[in-house]
Length: 131
Image (cartoon, rainbow, N blue to C red):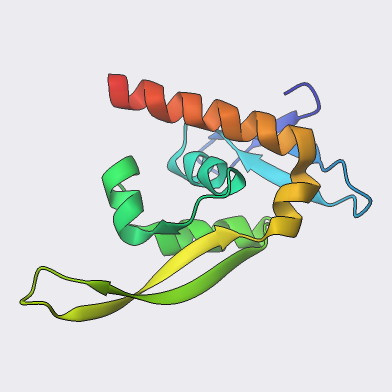
């Protein structure tokens, strides 16, 4: 990801990066470290995936998807929330949960930098599962 410049993600010193999108809109997007849960969530969204809290718990062992989505939104990412009905193991009871996805325009605007980041985040996720 040559077009990324590194900076600190937060006061805890997690590394992150900033990159310019390659579209006519010229958005500037913030890319958290791919080693962080937030980075792997963003990578999933950049690949067009939709995530619920249950997905995040299973894949990243993280109970806090909503605050991570909010942090990504504050960083400039346009993430859409859709409330969906899901089944539970509680005698067939249904529950409403949030499902998040990155809007298509943001994925397109992220361009090659976003695709490279998403691929690197997936590789980091696979590596973490293997260890």
